[in-house]
Length: 551
Image (cartoon, rainbow, N blue to C red; front, side, top):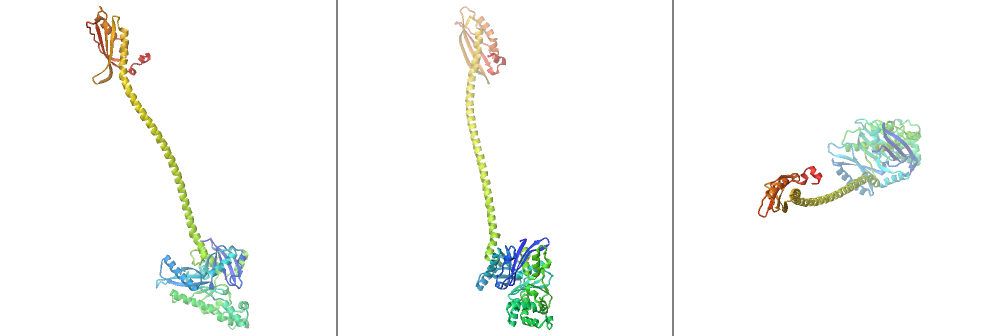
């Protein structure tokens, strides 16, 4: 609900503009202005109020509005809305013009028959457009139209003398209208809008004295006295004549209240319903003797309704406060219009023109749907943006991964090539090793032969073969040395000496695990053979000093 509300109540004689807000101490009136109206409807300049009129709540009364009651069984809200829409369409066809309407349930239903009572308010669109133009001319706008009778009820709920279970008739008497609400405790039993007011008294006086309506109204204010106790004791003969002329018309006011009570009894099925009090407001409440007339006819207390006694007026500018004091009773409806917008616990019955309804629907629904759509689009945009960033990050990671995979594949390919080359090299090395170790032993053997071969012998043949001993896979070399002795030489002694020195040669003892005994054979050709079977240690396993010596 709004914290501040502006109300506009345009009557036949004056227009009331009131601004109120909800504060810590309840309702506070901030501004007030009373403006005179002309004889023609809508002949008022609201700019003279000097109050912003944006989103104002306007009152409806008289011929501008119609109230109807419908009895419906308890139904869901959507079904009740459909029923009311059908009834509104039917009434619009009967009236021959466009209508705007609103409805609300009355707090008390018929418990015996199990039905609810719906209060339906209808207004002609041309009447609503007229007030909209009046506010538009003052740079204002209309938020809603509210029946004066329900505004009167809201003013009573918010700032009235509410008594539990007391049946009170709230009566706002205007020049051309009477707004009436019958309340029991805080429950609205009946609301009514009448097109009669104090103008009937003016017409009766004008007809009786053959004067203008303006003169008749002046006579009414100055001389009329409706109090039954004043009979036979009037201020003057002229006052008695004016009173007698207006008495028949004045009796229509208590008659309207009594008929309203009868309608309320029939509708609520409360046969013993009776009024405990009548509260009067409006310009007509000031008529001399009216309260006495109503007390005599209605047989109950009649008082003036002054809700401003329970409202904070300290914020009012002095001029506004003075004007409100002068129009205190005429401004009750304006207060009810304002508080109805400030408190959502009060009775809501707001008639909206189609243009205003579309605007509010747009603000309350469409704009939020658009905002929600914008939020959704924004969220989707963010998700898309985050998704794109994530996809980009994933693409970058994938690209980096592909680079790494390519590099790893290249390394793997090179490793496989190197492994293949290593395998070839290993095979070659193994092959060369098989060849190298015997040759290495042969080189040592050749050195030893060269160092110890005597002159009586010469080398005829040197043969090297590779061999293994059993399961021993250590490389071995078998050297066959065959020589020939000179004629006349004792080959056996020479060979024995040679073999001894040969065997003891340090070049053979280092790096050779075993030197097998050689054998010497001699035949007629003086041939000598020495077979050396030895195991040769690989060069890297030889002592370090051999490596230093380059052996």
